[in-house]
Image (cartoon, rainbow, N blue to C red; front, side, top):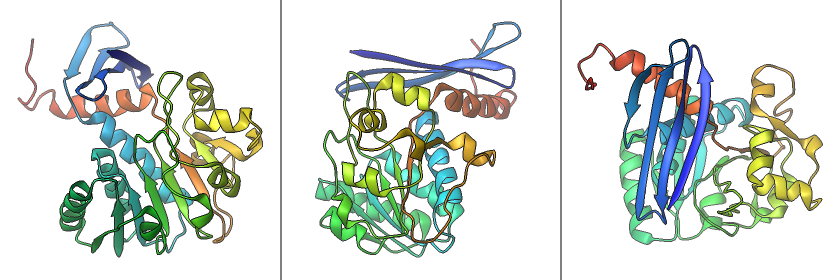
Length: 269
């Protein structure tokens, strides 16, 4: 059994995302928020969806600032809830006209296409391969738990934006993207360089193995603050290698707490 905790503090609150996991057969996600002033517990979100939605929101920010302004077609590799929230977030920042989904299990990708096509009111096609999903897309979402690359980086068109959320850590290696993607993408953005290094995730390994250099890797906060440039022309392939941090869960948890504390929806213990 794995016990994981991501702490963070924001706007007078502190807390953590807490996960227990046993090969996904037993899997629980909780977020707990405390007052930074008194230390008192404010709320516990048990088996909640905060993690999925905060990851989706972060991916949406990446697409907003890095995808081409005319991007309207999305390829999704993966069919889990994280794939759903990533697609919802892109639809919030770009006017989508159609999308494609591929994942290894035919039944799951078909169900994803029906559900998300209906929710977003766009044609959502079931692809028979990753390459088929990619061939007409402007934005690529990879939301898998794969240990090996899920597509050939040579098949990427110029001008694409990629959001990749599988990072892994020292104990659970994940590798959605091959070295060709990392070499072709510029700029590359991450949530936190420190987190990338501590976890020894794929961007860290690519720098260590001299596949890429740190000078093409930037933190997303630097882009939002105007300290570094994002996309500078429509031919660039941009990449947001999204790795979650505890402050993201605490920020969303605090906002949710402020909405529900007087609503009668939360149970007082």
